[in-house]
Image 1 (spheres, rainbow, N blue to C red):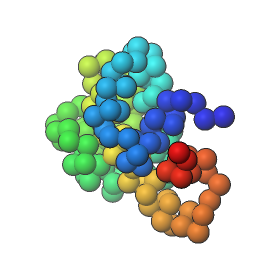
Image 2 (tube, rainbow, N blue to C red; image 1 turned 60 degrees about the vertical axis):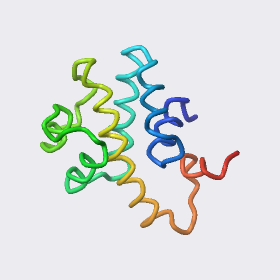
Image 3 (tube, rainbow, N blue to C red; image 1 turned 30 degrees about the horizontal axis):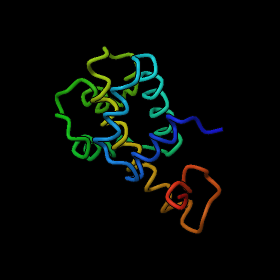
Image 4 (cartoon, rainbow, N blue to C red; image 1 turned 90 degrees about the horizontal axis):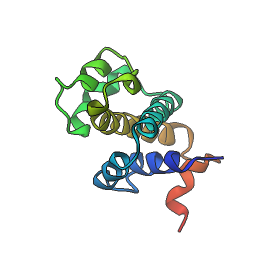
Length: 127
């Protein structure tokens, strides 16, 4: 069963929900839930087969500076962002959504182009 925060994260990555709305949602969560959302994004990036060579573009897409801690971590292929201080979590969200978005788009083009049964790939078709 897909959790509500997983739906929101997938909608952000698929461009079905604006990032500004996603940030507002994320910042309204208590810290523990924010960390859980970040952990889910890390998992989703792995499942979507994110690659190290996706990092520069994901940093650019995220709008955070390459010198911010989450970006520096990602350039070292360190995805342990759920352990960062609370003030870094929103930046981590932006960065990981960008990375997940790129990896998932590639996955859809390569493996799901003819249709698939991934529940999260059907969100756009739902009312």
